[in-house]
Image (cartoon, rainbow, N blue to C red; front, top):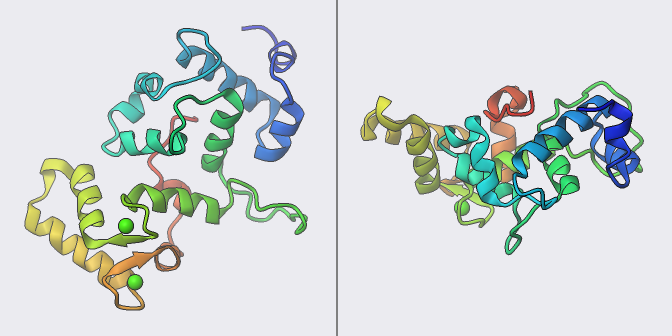
Length: 194
Ligand SMILES: [Ca+2]
Ligand SMILES: [Ca+2]
């Protein structure tokens, strides 16, 4: 294990990483241990298969899509810095902290979290969640507990409630507004950070 400082000293540009992500030294060390345990071949990089070892993802119905979100198009491996930056999306937002407006929006802001969640639904990446996409995600999340008819009615109701411009799809703005009263940290079912 080693002390916090000896682990931190192994990570290049660790100060910058903490500043960018808002993670504490103790957090970074925990994530580093996590990364190392997933990186079985000790290459310093993770591949999508390595995420299969995360039980909560393996059993999450949209686990594959969440894993896909870690890898941008054409990217096959992930280094520690990218790993931490993506996980920073799930760090609870500090709503009341005063922020320097000249700095870029923190990665764990509500907007970033919502964007991350939105792309899990927007399967064809056209910037809108269609009824078919919503149905597909709902189907994979609820599996056998509900009938197809119930699923369709849930999808219809969700779209009706969120679809302000009546184009039968949910844009990012509509998605954001419909979730305004919901705690997004609670909504995101990805808890492998804790
Ligand atoms: Ca779409
Ligand atoms: Ca719409």
